[in-house]
Image (tube, one colour):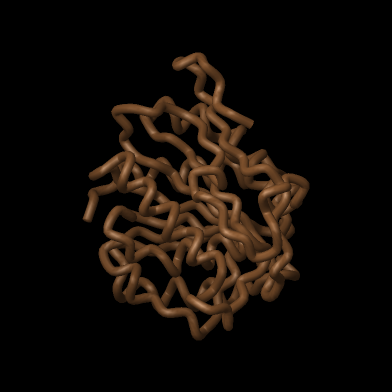
Length: 239
């Protein structure tokens, strides 16, 4: 879809056509981003990353549940973030997998870094808050060392003891996880947050109680945590 012609529209979607997403194909990063919110005089860009799976080179299509889950969240929190002067950009990864052994590094990190380059090119000096779910949260943590990034909101993150934390130096980290999550490990997230406190500007964890990984049960609560955590980082002192 192409953006509407009305300059006052809050929703500017630039979804890539699925027909261009051949397996492993790289499309222009701008066409992988769905944008909502203001386009000028921004206080921040909230760059959102969806979930995936450990290994897959299958393209992420418009019917992907992991992407649709974050698209719905974007729609539901973008208005309040726009009132703060922040735009939300939802990145659709090229492929579904993390693919740790991929040439050039894990697949979503390549896409995430390209998206961050685009933010800097279009909005130089504007701070970026990364908001990710599951694999997307792991991606956000991994690329948090980008000079534009001021913090990360990690929802039901897929984090492991092997994931580094040095890139969070000077950044804020807020992680939200449910102990009842059967897909990713609450304990691994708690351990990572504890470890990150030694380098991050701030790091804390929100216990989501008896909720699930998919963020479908009590969706409004997940949205509220995402919104409030993101707004908190936007309002926090920069690097």
